[in-house]
Image (cartoon, rainbow, N blue to C red):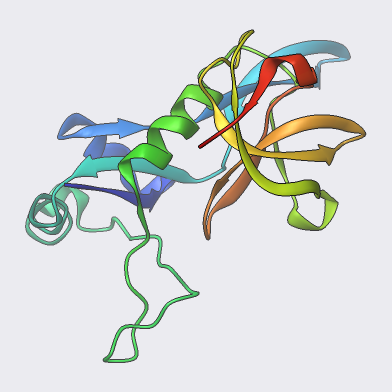
Length: 171
């Protein structure tokens, strides 16, 4: 069983058939002249689906109601036949991402790699606070020390500020 990624607008019908996750976060937006806290997708357009390759094939190719669903492809890898494979996320990496994106904090953000300045390549684990249990790499992003969680080929997600005392090197 793997975790597959699908564009959000294509995958809504699949939510009724399997375990799926849409990462959400809060942002402040001007709505009718007032600043409102609004929940929106953290990674626009993607639904993460946990199922076997057979199940996803069955859903996508043999169910007329969702025949329009498309996969999100790994454009950094090429199969022997020259095609790109469907993007898969390792279970532990997905659980780490869910742990991070489930925290109710306005400062969690998707961040462009060019704006991330890693302190070192070392992996850390957050040992205290709202983000306890999240693993990633320490970086300076948006002017603060944060832990960056990477879903390779998809996105970098940054925690809010994390004090050094709340971090421990991951073995």
